[in-house]
Image (cartoon, rainbow, N blue to C red):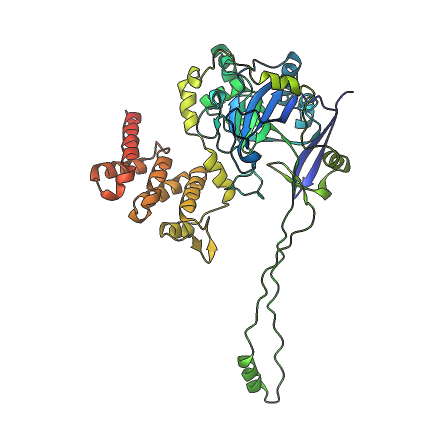
Length: 478
């Protein structure tokens, strides 16, 4: 039976959301739980696989019984050597259709037939071609290690916020990289509308299905890496309702024969009106279903799509699961590192926004100068409200990350003010490392230079970072 793919665009709070339902899909691309395949001896870890065809591609070790707030250990499966011809053609055709002007629904149709049954959303978004820690993504997963930002629920962003994933995991081994292909993509990326196609995996990370060489070219040429994103909608959510605060409970003043003077006396003796506490209402059941980037209420879903979500399963093991399990132990002779890539690409990757900056950008809407001044004084509240977090150190860290992502000039000023304050010495080293990324800032150079030459005790923790920054700045100026 052939796959049945339907698409529909709904209006959600004034924004258009593209929904795609897949029925009788081939389940050739997707994720599934593989049980306890971690050989460390821990019974609390579970393995999740991202697979393409009959091959496991990305291995997720999920600690703490797959706790949604825990980051995962991620690695590229060493036995994977490439796509099957049918899948390779489907990805290539979809990529060409998108860049020839087709809509997301039409352009991605061939890929949707390869997915697991369920409801998906598709949209365009810019990605940073790194692992979220400044390492270029293509060769950054050879060894299983904990990757920041892979938790389904970020402790910084919070469980109720929506966010757009923006970091990558490869689905091709790095030994596929060739300088000849890269020369061609250097020219092609200048004219492409879509640079890559990605499938969301977990948290802030997505698997790159198509566009690996283009990611190298875009990074080297400083071209935004714009991707067509596919997200599966499976997670139920419940919105907490916060009604408006009721009016103060008070009774009208009694009328007296004394007239105005009596009225004043009664008003003075009247009790102070009491304000009832603001109630919180948690409705029974769920509000709707969500993916990382969108929350869709039940009433907004087309009926047939809602039926697929409710009657189907959030995930299931594909029919080729036994083959996937058997291939998990396959080992290649050699794992190629990122060193084969141009040095300029690796250097620019280090300067891209990382997970901490992205999380802070979603957690904070804005920070006024008055709020920043309160933090510099050691206060975590402004006008009776918590600025960022009740924890002061966490507030400084999050504020720095937010400013570094959103306003470089204010970030430099805020960082210098922190490092110049001996009362905030606990945050000096972290802020200095953050500020060191602004390698072209003359203001930071002057500050670090004075700190190194002055020898003041309050700068003790930042001296190594300051010296490195000064040396690099001088080398760039030559």
